[in-house]
Amino acid sequence: MNNYNFRIVVFFIFSNIFLIRGQQELSFNHYMFNSQLFNPAFVGLDENLSISSIHSIQMVGFDGNPVTNSILLDTPFKNSLGAGLEIISDKIGPVNNNFIAINAAYHLQLNSNNHRLSLGLKLSGNDYNINYNSLDFDDLSDPNAGKIDSYFVENIGFGLYFQTDKLYLGFSIPYFFESKKINKKRHYYLSGGFTKVLSDKLTIKPNFLLKKTADTPTSIDVSSIIFYEDLFWLGVNYGGSQRGFFTNKFGESISVISGVKINSSFSIGYSIARHLGGWTASTNSPSHEIYMKFSASKKRSKSTTENSTEVIE
Image (cartoon, rainbow, N blue to C red; front, side, top):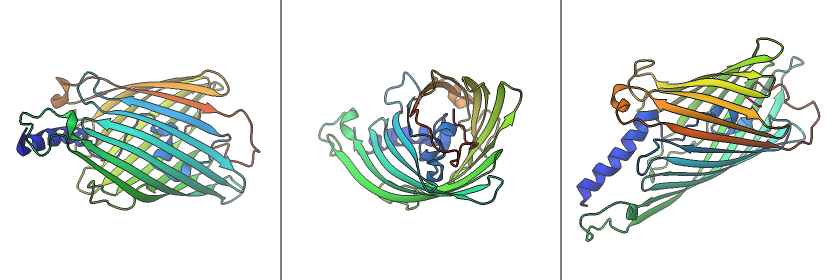
């Protein structure tokens, strides 16, 4: 494979990623269950220590399709503090990312009406690798054959979170520095949602996640999930960009999200997504996500954020 053909392969891989979401950073259908992924101010909102995992596999059946595995730890502390840990492995074609981040947050009570403002900080490191051995070269004398490019990139980010008993809003820049090594651009996130009680047994929680970076269209995920007695849930998520909301173009997607609480400590969820639009319809295959969460049974004082409107099952 000569340099020209190699560039075509890499361009094809990455153009498909960016057309789907218009973003460089990871996207999950279960973003509303693990908001520390994009906003460190969310850590410590749950009552208990929790460990969660998301396994995502996209475009099933295609060689080199994106596969992402994550483990997240979230724990509250005394004095309105919270901490979190992210360990993520993301692989697509010859590109492999291994990522770790530490999150910390302080939750400030604003008034007696349970209005709060949270401030979060993210410290991260990204081990970024391109393994050219996974590509087929027609000419083994090509200087790219057998080559491995590897970079380690440190970063810092922050987040804000405002909450009342019924709604929340969040803003974050999870990775502030723009790395030229991997052409990393700064991303801006705006999230929000609210809770509405439909009956004694049913509660609905609509959420949105708005994402923006330079030189790409603004993208948005909008979801709505119905919970039955905190035992199981069912919802739908729509993802699109400002270039074509509900136009069947530019990599829109629709997802169905479901889950069940097995017991007081363990929950499991699943989602399936399909991309919309004429250019993807003939080559589209489903994407799957499996979400699991374990929460420690020990309860904390009610002085914590037990009424958080983030989706906490």
